[in-house]
Image (cartoon, rainbow, N blue to C red; front, side):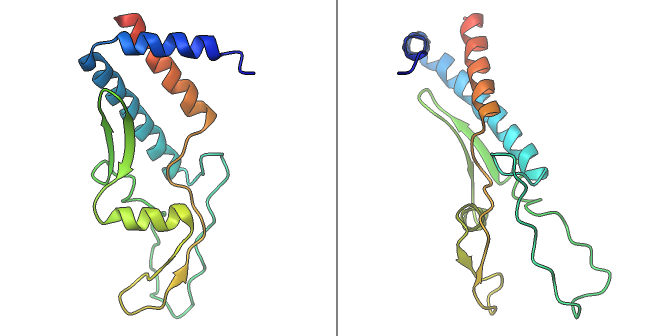
Length: 150
């Protein structure tokens, strides 16, 4: 049995007592904080559980000389593509536009074509978005902070 169930019910009642504008403000703050944490984690090339991403496949020697490979997902983690949204009932962090397909392929480890005329490649699973225990603690502290300011 969950020992925190009465606490969770009381917390849900306090959140429901907030005005819609207060809930919207709180969910936006939570979404922004989660996006920031996800961006830092993607930059560190770590999955939500703390394991490192599967490294890129080695490129053939015939490739371009002196080519500097950027880190994986450098553009995906930009605020332009990774949006934080929140309303009075939910907070969300999501990818927008054309990068959504790239993120979905890597998140689930699907097959995709890297170029228009290239063959399909099986990509390893690299979880871009996800919750860790630390994220849950941060969300709880943000909720308590908002409730104490009301």
